[in-house]
Image (tube, rainbow, N blue to C red; front, side, top):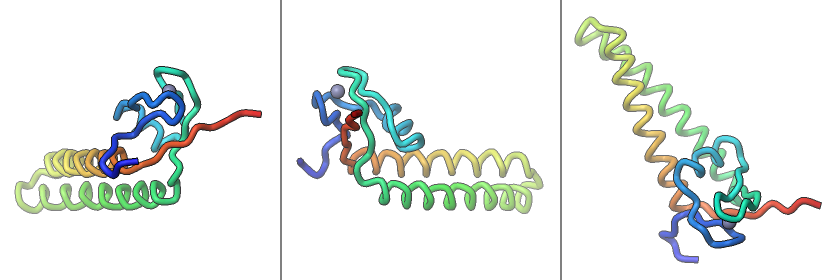
Amino acid sequence: MSKNQIACCPNCGGRIPFKKFVQLNNFSATNCGTCNARIEISNRTANAVIAGISGVISAASIVLGAYAGYKNYGSLLGGLLSGTGVAALIIFFICWYAYRHSELNRIYYE
Ligand SMILES: [Zn+2]
């Protein structure tokens, strides 16, 4: 497998859309849109760490944003909103990174 590969279905080789991958990251399993195979992320520990870190970073940027907004502009809501925007951006990039580096496994049922 090449290093810069986008997540692919281990069964049919179909590309897993980014939206589905985010779902996979959060709910740990999803179905391939092409062949309907049940798939999961194989390096789950790494993904749990990534999810934990992104959670902490996004929470911190929301708090910092609210604080900075309140301090600099007297607007808690404005700061909160921009902090949320930054958090969403960070989470998007972290998910994208995981998307480019994850390997997927097919789940077989008995
Ligand atoms: Zn497939």
